[in-house]
Amino acid sequence: MEDMSDVKSAVDAIDLTGNPIVEKLDSLSIPHSTYPHTLSMTADELVANVPLPSANETHTKNLFFRDKKHGLFLVTTCTDAECNTKELGKMLKLEGKVNLRLADEKILLEKLGCKKGCVGPLAIMNNADKDVTLVLDEGLMGMEKVHSHPLRNDASTAMVPSDLTKFLKEVG
Image 1: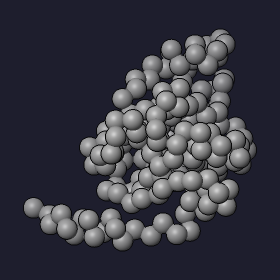
Image 2: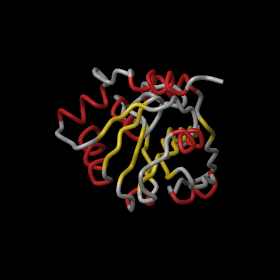
Image 3: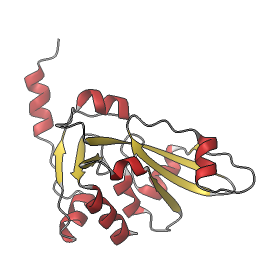
C-alpha cells in the first residue's frame, strides 16, 4: 500500500507559479484561491479525491461538444448535473438537425489549450478565435464558491460565482 504522506508531499510540492489562469486572475485583481490536489481525470474522481468544505461549494463537470452545423460548446455544470444533449440543443435554441458529440482531445488542445481532464470554464481564456460557446449551468451561480481546474487536473481554483463571471467577461 502506498504511503499517503508521500502522496501529500507530492501534492504540496506542485508549483502553480507561471500558471496562465492564476496570472490572469491576479492581473485582473480577481479574488481566488488556487490549490494543489490529487490528480483527478473526471468529475467523479475529483469529488471523491477532493472533498469541499461546504455543500454550498461545487467542483465543475465540463463537457466539450462539437456539432458540425452549430460549432463548439464548452458546457460547465455542477458535478451532480445530468447532461442530455437533445435537451441541451433545445435549451440553446439550436435550429435544424442537432448532433452534439464530445469533441476529440486534438480540438480541445487547439481551441482551449488544455488536455482532456484539465478543462474548465477558465480555459475559455485560451480561445483566441472566439469560436467556442461557453454554457454555464445556472446552478453554479447559486453556489458560495465554484472550484475549477486552471488548465491542469492536479489543482483547482476556487472563486465566488460573480468573480467567475467577471473573469469570463474580461477574457471573452
